Amino acid sequence: MLQDAGLASFADELWNKYRQNPLQWWQQNISEYGSTNRAEMFAELFSEYVVKGDDARSIAKQFGEMLEATMAKYRAGGND
Image (tube, rainbow, N blue to C red):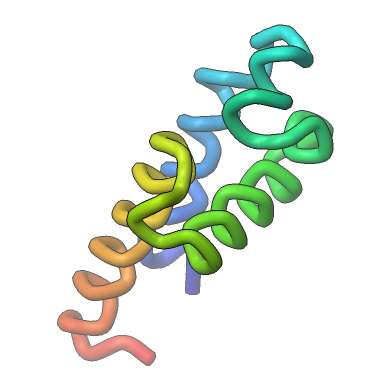
């Protein structure tokens, strides 16, 4: 479902954009654990957005808003 909704490619784009950043950047903007691979980055961003909502850091907020928009578009297409 995530692949169909385009969210996996969005996660790939974020991962490719940020993966080379130094560990200190990850600690400040996502988490050290999120720097280990794309799936962990996805999980860290998702959980921060769900827990903190509008108070989430900018990257988590961007990810969460993209998630919501992508899923709304996916659902509007009549897909489960």
